[in-house]
Amino acid sequence: MAGTDTSIKIELRPTPAVILCEPQLGENIGTAARAMANFGLWDLRLVRPRDGWPNERAVAAASRADHVIERVRVFETLEDAIADLTLVLATTARSRDLQKEVIGPDDAAIRMAAQIGSGKGVGLLFGREKWGLLNEEVALADCIVTLPVEPAFASLNIAQAVLLMAYEWRRHSDVGAKLPFADAMADVAPREELLGLFGHLETTLDGSGFFTAPDKRPTVINNLRTMLERGKFTSQEIRTLRGVISSIDRKHQRPNPNRHKPAEKTDDD
Amino acid sequence: MAGTDTSIKIELRPTPAVILCEPQLGENIGTAARAMANFGLWDLRLVRPRDGWPNERAVAAASRADHVIERVRVFETLEDAIADLTLVLATTARSRDLQKEVIGPDDAAIRMAAQIGSGKGVGLLFGREKWGLLNEEVALADCIVTLPVEPAFASLNIAQAVLLMAYEWRRHSDVGAKLPFADAMADVAPREELLGLFGHLETTLDGSGFFTAPDKRPTVINNLRTMLERGKFTSQEIRTLRGVISSIDRKHQRPNPNRHKPAEKTDDD
Image 1: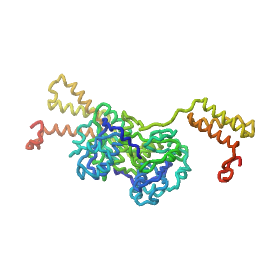
Image 2: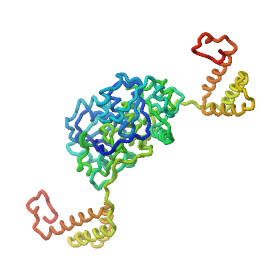
Image 3: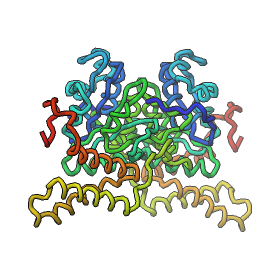
Image 4: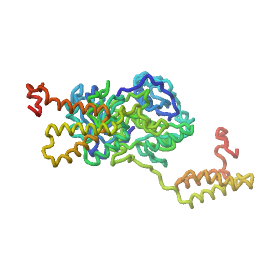
């Protein structure tokens, strides 16, 4: 989806670090960087990337998440990569035989937000494409985060796992679930204008002989008013509708331009 | 991330349909199908896919989301694709000058869940890679859904947008945010065993002359007990810790194997 507003400067707020353990493909580092950027994350750390760093394929796959790629830091050990952090969450799709709490992404985001809110460093660990995190890596984390996936189809690539965690983080951060744009909705018209529309329509229908059964008239009018009210029309929309009514109404007083187009059959043909 | 449990049969529950309008690349159709499968969606509809259907690249990119790919339906018009649906949500990253409500993914998921819960059909519209949905397509939807992205880096590919919507759908569906696996956490040991550990440690420390200032002993013991209590140890872990204490303690009664390894300096060297 398009929509990036390039006029806005990217600001680097305190956010969780993303730590990729021995990532194999540069593409995945790049797409992970892009997913981070989508939700305002920027601190990407790599532990022994297989193809070294910098990596051209990563840069290409990041599609302009340069502010993330430029800041990538490479570490020899996971211990070094997490040394400055106080909360470390290990993402995994597999159950581990470890005495460690397992939480979902929203719980994780709430805990991360609390830590970052109090100025602490937080990190999210992601494992290798092929077999994820090793148990000794998970053992270094405070707890395990896993996603509420369909167990029969649980395999996510790294960028997608990063995207979902980054999304949940942002929803729970001080930025919150703020949307990049809001309704262009104009105000609903004052009742007076809606009543004007009702009157206009009902007078016109009286003139066109719409109410064949006079005793039913009140009920039919209530139903019409109910229908129209639900539209929550703006002043402009009410003007448009009244124009529509007048136009159809006036048609009776002028030669019908459709007279010779049976395709567009009209009620007075 | 690995983790798919191939022993579980995929069941097709009522879920939102995903409608891709004029998708250009087969890869994106495939990765969208995979993202759907991750969160239990399976009804994928294509409106005029540029490269036709079936599409080999889509199949390859779907990486075994065959149950989605096999059920793909192709439509000539968006109107046909949504004909059977009662709630239609248009995803877009751009503000439109339309008198239409804009909501976030969680709101959208709550509304979708309500409709599907009452047996209605729901659909999510996604636009072309290059320029998203056309206004006349958005106009056919009940409301606009957009993601709480970083405005300065808002561009998501289709599969990622589908992934996030599918994730939010599942969180709010009757399946809920159920995680594919839970803690392997054993129960915390009964207090009696924790008190046994306290006693064992404190007796050992009395023997080793740890409490140099007897008047401080109660405070130090309270601090030690507080520290250990926080561990929420299981019975097995308490046995392990008592083994650790005994082992260090017994060291005083046997020749120290580390005597000639200054690298591993120990307190009685």
